[in-house]
Length: 121
Image 1 (spheres, one colour):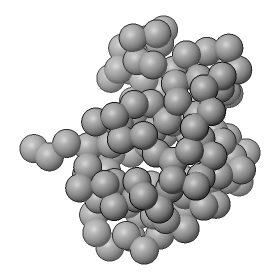
Image 2 (tube, one colour):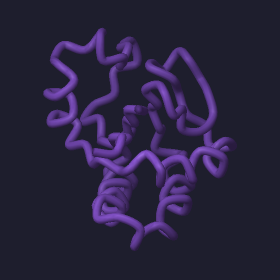
Image 3 (cartoon, one colour):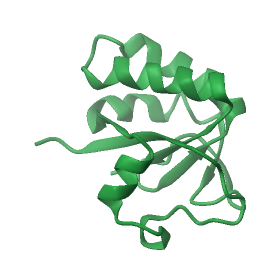
């Protein structure tokens, strides 16, 4: 089974919270359900790392600004960066069944002004 990267929507961002799995109030599997995560094959996400490097993001919490998707950590993607993420992901629509579902999830996050969470491998 290939490695996957999981993308989800944070219902309400907590500016004081560390979203690292060991700091969560629930297990990793429960977090995947709570954030309604979509899994995408790691090989596909690898192709998105470099194009995402200019996109403002955060690592683990809002007090750790960063750029791009961190392949091995928890990335928080603010609403202002979601249109850029959508443009990176769209060309891969046909690559895997998870990608169209991820596109829908990104569009939902944009529409509702929510942060997204990305659990790296």
